[in-house]
Length: 150
Image 1 (cartoon, rainbow, N blue to C red):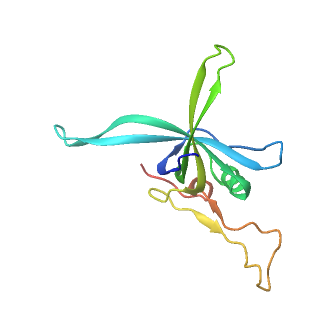
Image 2 (cartoon, helix red, strand yellow):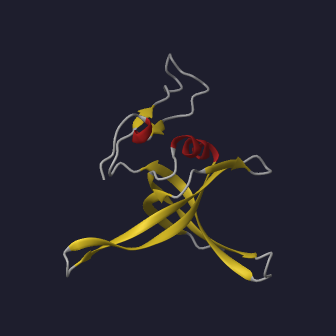
């Protein structure tokens, strides 16, 4: 029996998502999210970075294509999914190692500091239905000509 640990994180992509397919044909996208912890320094009354935690994330099927097509290194994202733990044997040392990954149910661009444009597909029963349409796709603001002030 596995333990299901639901998590939601907010952070920035450390690189472009890697998109691929398993031997059985299941599509996936893998990426890493850097989550910065900020704390108020009560002495200086200023916000300071208190450390960064890196989370490896994997998402499957149709959403993996949307992630690979829509998100790039540095984009702010929200990820909701389950934390999964695993083990493997290190090929160089022969020692057992532990892994921690988030298997994402939902991945989205964070709208905290930027805006995005969505391209919506028509409904399947509408007159302009396109059977090849895959659903809404978010276009990051950097790709839509918007600027971000940080």
